[in-house]
Image (cartoon, rainbow, N blue to C red):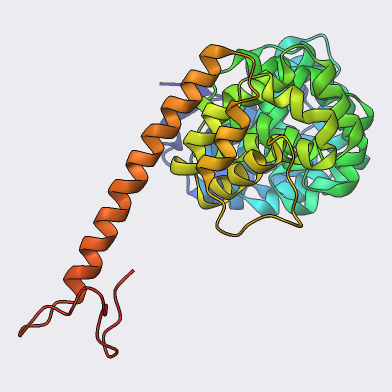
Length: 386
């Protein structure tokens, strides 16, 4: 059972060991007084208590919000152990509390946090990255974090940090990339190589891979992003693997990224994408993806044909025609055979789905007295269910 400054913690609340229990208000008032004390050790103990109280209590996050300003002051002026205690307390105050997230930024936390992102102290850097990630979840903070200069050091953490710091950095960068101004800053500090490196090394179905793909999808809207990806060894392949093995959202972002590339300059990127064996994954995605990713997979398959001509395209054109055209141009015999096999499986699935649909239509067209004539369909007053 932890003991802090004479306080014994019981079921998440503090009681005075000798003088009897204290009310929650009295305890909070005491903590708020001590966190503003001139004595550094007293402030550190108060910060530790705030961290413990706010770890899993939304009520305490509200009640102890007044501690934010003195805690931010500790980030600027305290010794190393003082800064760590304040940083961890601020982290817990910010979790699931949008108001506190804004208050922390208003109190001036971004300047010291950005400095910590460049620290050689691994623990301090990791905590600061987690804090920026937490603060970046609030929309009001996103442009302010970008203008505070946090993006370049976040990319550096993405390149050189430990595993947890890199994961937190990519999640923070994803949050911040939804602001156009931040995306422009991000492009200037060359984030694609460390993003690709992280995507290669992580499990493709993980949340980390999903956010890597989402961030790459945004960056590939710009020529600098597309050039950087194709210049990175295994860059396009990493997206293809995410398309094949990722989560539903991750696959959606991966196919979106590849489609963005091909749409921007088909002549430049078509062979690059085809060369990484993307066709089997696209075929699977047309059957098993989200509605958006299925549509994107169809669009990319059309672009990967030898001579797509939108002006003369036939409305009745089938996926089989598109795929056969692509497969005939794939150099790898193994890749071609896999694509043909998957196409056959897809056709079988399509036939089974069509049969179930016909059976469903037939059942809805059945009346108590008779079955409607097959060639005439359902009577006008009946609407088949979808």
